[in-house]
Amino acid sequence: MAKIPAPKNICCLRLSSIGDCINALAAVQLIQKQFPETKITWLIGKTESSLMTGIPGINFIAYNKKGGFKEYIRIKKILKDMPFDCLLDMQSSLKASFLSLLVKTNTKLGFDKDRAMDMQQIFTNVKVKSPESPHVLDGFMAFAEEIGCKIDKPVWDFHLTDSDYSVARKYHIDKTTMVLSPCSSKDYKNWTIVGYVEACRFAASKGLKIAICSGKSKKEKAIVDEIIENCGAIKDKIINLSGKTSLREMLGVIDCAGIVVSPDSAAVHMANALNVPVVGIYAHHNPKRVGPTNFMKYVVSIYEDEIMKEHADSSNLKWRTRVKNKHAMLNITSAEVKKAINDVINDYNL
Picture 1 (cartoon, rainbow, N blue to C red):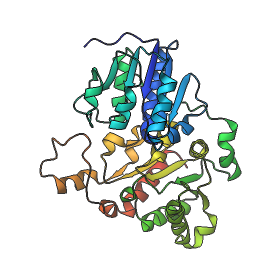
Picture 2 (cartoon, rainbow, N blue to C red; picture 1 turned 180 degrees about the vertical axis):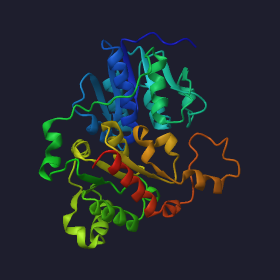
Picture 3 (cartoon, rainbow, N blue to C red; picture 1 turned 180 degrees about the horizontal axis):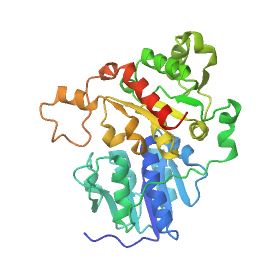
Picture 4 (tube, rainbow, N blue to C red; picture 1 turned 90 degrees about the horizontal axis):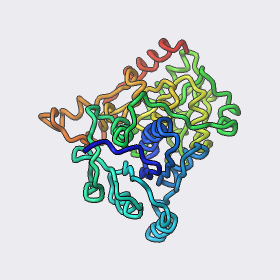
């Protein structure tokens, strides 16, 4: 199908996760750059919308995923008198697909058969061809290309304000600081306490300050407390930011830091978007699909080794195939992570 002419009014649909919304933002801001007259509305998750606050030129409609039918009706009322030239349905899920029914347009772009799931193809009438690259970012950029954009190097601008840097200023976060974000959205994607402790000790031995970030849940705070308690002689020097930042304040902290270390989490994508060197730690998901595109050089991954243990022929695996062994992260050694940290220190003169 021929490329769609540049629309004057589009709706983007990507509810979650934080990392995926960050990647989708690159595609949306490419559209903004190349089609500055185009009006953009974005249906986005409530939590994820708090990250985007302050970005100009986008009308964010926050959807509470826990709101049930009442929330669906609320969104329906908002969209009732809002016709669009096209919908960019960047989320392949039933919940998103049912929301897409509320978007008034005759042109609904969705993933092709290689990336669509949960019957998304039933709800869309333009199938965006999957790019050769397996990365989710490139999959989102393909939507921009489909409506006529020329693909360019991804650029992110969160339009951070002085208040977004308040926590970074308070705790003197600077380029001599390593930010450790130890918690992923799923427990099985987290590395080990011992590993995190050794990473902190190594960074401290290289003269770096350490700040540890996490969400506000009791579980995440407990993980951070355990890491710090086991750091021994350096524990009193570690900055505990667990539960002390909003998402935008965390962006401010990362933007000021010299290096970020994290398993597959929002922090990896924040650092990547802010062009802050990040050591991403992976076992379950293919970093070629979800890793930090600007810093793949520093990725520590055993995905290929682990996936071969579960699939005799790994050459034709489905795009989303993940390692099922919930203990796979235990096989990543401290030596591998410390080497990656050391490489960043040397390459960026930290």
